[in-house]
Length: 259
Image 1 (cartoon, helix red, strand yellow):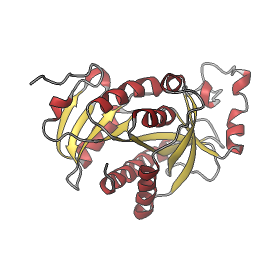
Image 2 (cartoon, helix red, strand yellow; image 1 turned 60 degrees about the horizontal axis):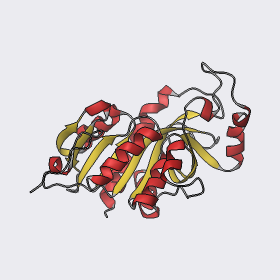
Image 3 (cartoon, rainbow, N blue to C red; image 1 turned 45 degrees about the horizontal axis):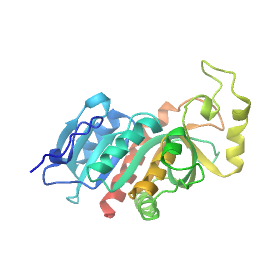
């Protein structure tokens, strides 16, 4: 019997999953978040890889379902590599658990945004599908996230996310090393606000397009850690609660859904 390949970037293959063969991955940009999810919420946890800081863990959810907690790295190019390899090891559901910045006054730090679709301004996504291809979340997994937030009493918002490639210029931050934004980016946050976009983040658009093209269920829940109607900085006092809320919602949705 031929051994399955170990994928270069995620650092593991199907053989490393033994007889558990998870079809669900919880995907975090931050390796510490991926570790915390596994250590605090999984049973029978086993580290699969720390290759390139893309930490991955195999474990079991409280309902007995096998799952992965994996790191995507920052931004869509890194995420696209990790997701491609996760699909090759058998993953069929991916929930991104991230952080974001609100661009609406009613979407407050500490709450979560559940993305039903993304305004996708990402180069990596254009390598997956044309710009016109819809960046839409899986409807069933998204409903599971909304229902989980309701059950848990988490302040949540369902809507459209602006998914962009850069944290500073692309999100119209001028308080950085480059205060001279391109003309095409000046005023873009206000424009998106009038289009009823809820938040900025950097991965969901590419994830959603990959889900459509590759044939897996993709969803995204992000804790709100910045309020761009009042300033450009992360609200550190609310970050911990926002992340915990996003994790709780994702775990509850994962426990209630299956492929």
